[in-house]
Length: 122
Image (tube, rainbow, N blue to C red):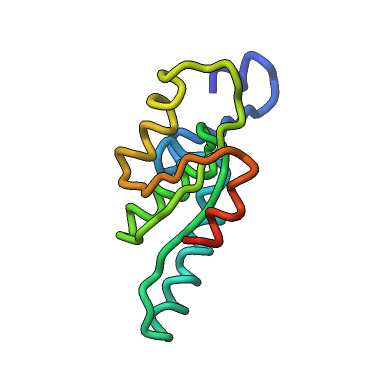
């Protein structure tokens, strides 16, 4: 209210860190709808749901996906590509990569050229 009063216009702030899964982000709602739909289809067909997605090592999309899967107890495989050159081991063991591991992702680290082939194998 103080900032709105100071500026003379209403100011609204959206905090993605308060939106839920693993630090939030704009992908949360979409993932919730997609996973619900996939769960319903798997249930109807009597199949186990396994989610596979891909992105870079520090992908926010992958972090959000494994968080949504962990919340619903769904097996999740992340095919992560090494998009950045000249980084050390810390890059591969911190940030989103560390959260992916904590949340229980099955991580498949690949060079970019191998990503599609790896997803098809899974």
